[in-house]
Image 1 (tube, one colour):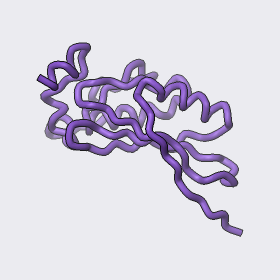
Image 2 (image 1 turned 45 degrees about the vertical axis):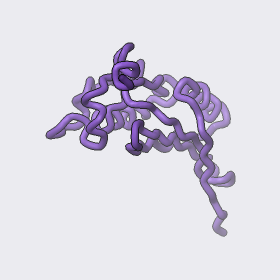
Image 3 (image 1 turned 30 degrees about the horizontal axis):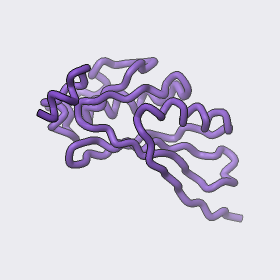
Image 4 (image 1 turned 60 degrees about the horizontal axis):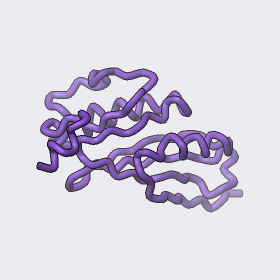
Length: 136
C-alpha cells in the first residue's frame, strides 16, 4: 500500500539552520539534501529532511534566503554528510558556509568561471563587510 506523501517547507533565517537541523535529528529524521537556486539578488537554499519510516508527510524542511555576500552556518556538526551540498552550493552559487566539517576551499568542483550558477557572487565575496559592499 502506498502512502500519499507531500512536501512541506517553511521559511527560516540562516541563523536558524543549525537549530532546525538539530530538531530534525532529535526526531530521528534523515537529512536529504540542500538545493540552491539563484534569485534576483540572493540565493535560496532549500534544506530537505525525510522521515525514515515514510509514514509522515514525506519531505519537510526550510527555505532560506541568502543575500549575496553573506554566509550561512554549516549544519555538518549535526549531519556530517551535508558537507557535499554545502561545498557544492559554495562552488556553484557562491554561498559561503561557516565551520564546514570538510571544507574543500572552493575546489570541490573544477569550473571554468567562478560561481557559474550565480555570476554576481564573484563580485560580492562573503566577507565581514561583504553584504554592505554588495549593497553599495
